[in-house]
Image (tube, rainbow, N blue to C red; front, side):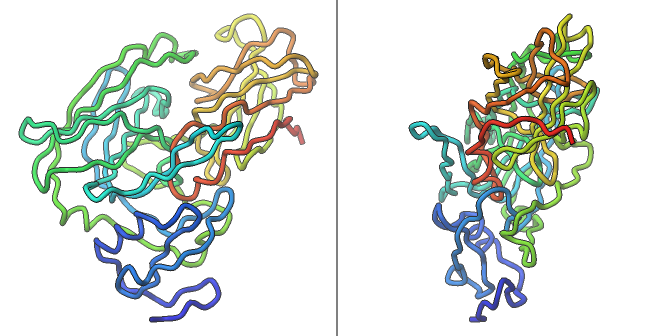
Length: 358
């Protein structure tokens, strides 16, 4: 077996489908498994999981199942290899991640991205469930997790069992959006709905989905580039926000941009807008609970909201607010979204912060 030297591995042959499954299924909660090119599970070695956002050990492709229309929303459904992911749980006064392993009967990792057909903006907070049937018989039914990955950004996803090769119907259901919606989004996305798409599945097609291991940058601080999906947007946060800039800040590996916006669509008082995004790729981070204190006053809760110019953000109208005020943001609840590898140790311990206008 080739020895490991430094942080580089000897060139390795392509992985078989079973080997991919072993790598994606992962090792222990405190380790990451990396295939070392020995032709079997004995070729796995373990290393400590990096803290914060880091480059994963591999990237993989996906196959399109189909795209459905649900009122004002479009939803793209794709699949790839089943793999581990991490959910967020409260443990006393802290939040921790809990790994979900690949089960023996898991056949695919199914992903769904909802977006506004008119603007192309990815829309979190819809809630989403999937029913999979074959020949009219129910195969699997799940309310799937809101998730964050470096390649896809925000999406919904879970591992699913299937009943072998064949034709499947996938029914996607979304709930109505209850968060504030501004501008052209006002009054939209309030009704839920469901729609069905059909796809042919074969284990051979699954095994042909591209899978590439990373050598030079893996486990280092950073992120892989988001994938480009034809006609399917990625949930990027705006580079800058309209209004009077408060500045930028970081907490728990997440980046934040703040602004004071004065516009009739937010009411008569100035509107405090806070945009949370991942470092490196600037992907929106939903599922947080934020509150703000102005000039040392009481904290007020910020609402998750969507706006065509601010994107998905957290905000509240605050009487008398100006960019010269000292605004402190407290993360009361870290992102309640499941994480793919590279994000599982980030966005958990998030101390209060103020914006840096420099």
